[in-house]
Amino acid sequence: MSRRIVLLSSVGVLLFSLASAETNTSFAQTASVTLPGKIQTVFVIVMENKNWVTIKGSKYAPYINGTLLPIAAHAERYNNPPGIHPSLPNYLWLEAGGNFGVVDDGPPSAHSLTWTDHLVMRLKGKGISWKAYMEGITGTACPLADEGLYLVHHNPFVYFNDVTGDLDPSSAYCIAHIRPFAELATDLAKGTVAQYNFIVPDLCHDMHQPCNGISQIRLGDTWLSVNVPIILRSKAYQSGALFITWDEGGNRSDEGEETSDGPLPMFVLSPFAKRGYNNWIRYNHSSLFRTFEIIFGLVPPLPGDIAHDAELSDLFTTFP
Image (cartoon, rainbow, N blue to C red; front, side, top):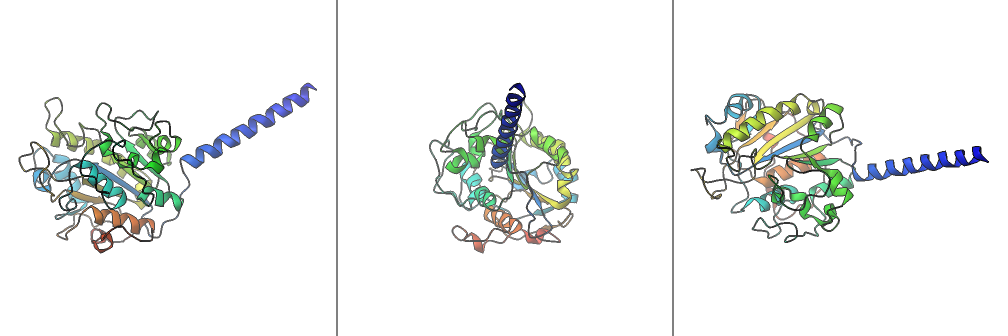
């Protein structure tokens, strides 16, 4: 009788383990899907509120000007969509190709979106893995509100009900896919990074504002100098592309609220990008969104007139 009980108990433990593994896999996809071109992994870093003219040649941005420019392809005429301000509408544009009429930085509770045809859900439908890495979150709850140096309106994913389970702070899907930034280095080292990775520094590192009396440009430049090389040294980057852009323009005095559409800084680093190249093609966030669709093999329909915007293929030697 005791042997039978032990056997049944062992079977029960095994079934529980298998069920747990299946549940975890359903929340955080880890398997890779072969994408149409050579680019198999995408990284995006979004900084804050700066015009390219403010950063280009700045003594406060030695890494951007001295290291990134010689190895990256960059655009001289990349803007946020015309008249789209403040931050949140631009982040939503990067995720869904439009701002859904949102023209403020309100929280998800004020802008709860039922639209399901946005980027990460389209990726999910094709089995393509994704994660957002947010600096300043704990990873123990779906981050639906500002906390410390984390601003929720810099996180477009939590505005979509299909990501948050209708604004559920305990949403397992949200928690599995929106992770603390510190986990990125571990995932890169272990080879478990997703195929689409959206990275947002905190308020002191995204060039949004000065902290501790240090220039916001210097803080952001230093943050990039520490973290970009970690991505560039990774195995995932060998078949990947890293896009670094800013959410919207700022005024030329670098003080106060955003007042311009750019041009914004836009860098592409990739084994398949044109090293040290720049162009004067007119781009905006629709161009970046369209570029993602092409890399991931997502078939239109596209929202609005996004299909008419130039994608970023000119910055690459091989695309996608």
